[in-house]
Image (cartoon, rainbow, N blue to C red; front, side, top):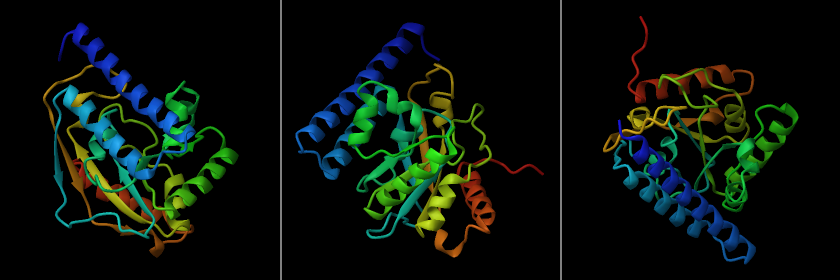
Length: 245
């Protein structure tokens, strides 16, 4: 635990980093000079600065040498227990165009919302089913264009760090686009900054455990529950969470 003054300082600098990257993304897009390669590099730099600010060390554990393959729609599905899951996740596949599925509310944030749009981050409306279906269509187009989609299938951050029930939307997208799902379990992010708190813990280590790829083309919308269960079990194990007897 750190002092309130240090907490405020970290929050302020983190916000500045975010506004800076989004502001530059907006400017680059308006002058038609933005490219995916530029966004990829800028995101990597943002993640590095954000993690260095609080001394997070990341260890990538990928025993199966899994990686997104060019020409194959790919969705990364990951547990979500901290705001730091995103910069930590970007360490897994630094050479890929990874973009995070984001809640629609963030679109309304000044600068940040427009910056994310310019950087090809997809949004999802969790409260409007009709709009959510349109958002899923946009995600499908991004996947087919080479974007690797990062999704937290829980839908929101876990309060206690334990894996929560999965939402179905991203699995529908995975099946309809015949995507490859790469399950990831992050260990240690909840210790850095638990959800819905400002209890920063400095100099922590986060482990990124990458599991075997799962071919969503083997499933249909009728048996999507089997796919959901398979991915849940994989992430549960990768995150190092014990199964109840």
